[in-house]
Image (tube, rainbow, N blue to C red; front, side):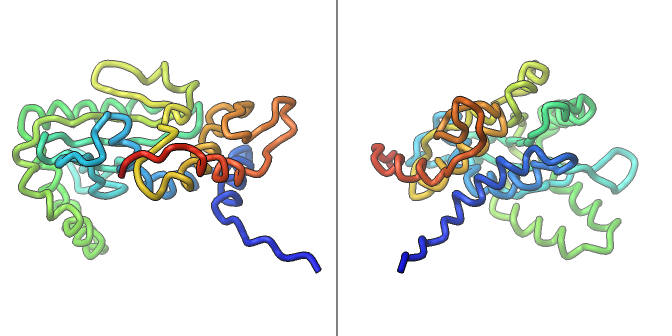
Length: 247
């Protein structure tokens, strides 16, 4: 009798992300975003060369941070708001997974907010939450947001620097790079991150690279003759043989 192999959730998830990325009208960002968020602190600290033992790492405050629109209490959201409190830097992180999802108006909004922060501090980003909350029936959700930002609230009035970061497919990168905006392609996300998440990250990163460049052979996601995806669990096995980063 053959033994049933244990279910490899991570590899199954990675393969589904890669396969479903080709489905018409499926918004891949909705698949990738929550997964990427689980690794975002480690990713950002590696990208910006901040040591794992730094007293001032880049930290995630919240996803879907609302940015109040002028003239009313409606808002648009940045994918993630992050902070480096001691260095007094905020990070607007925006994820794009479609090569045709360049949004000049959105980027201009972020740049204008960065100028406003430079001139006045970032304190208004929190006070605006109260205004948005007063115009909605879902006040409890904004209370939760204010709860998440509470440990960093006092830093906002001393922050005058916002970094606008885009994570995008390679084909979209050249069209986004300009003054005040820093862009990383999906395949430029680090291969190694510190800590216990490394093996899982390696499998998922291979799927993100496959979304970025469909024929890419990184992690053996696709064969050179383009016959389609193979099991990404091999990546997890290979990573065990690599030296671990210090956590």
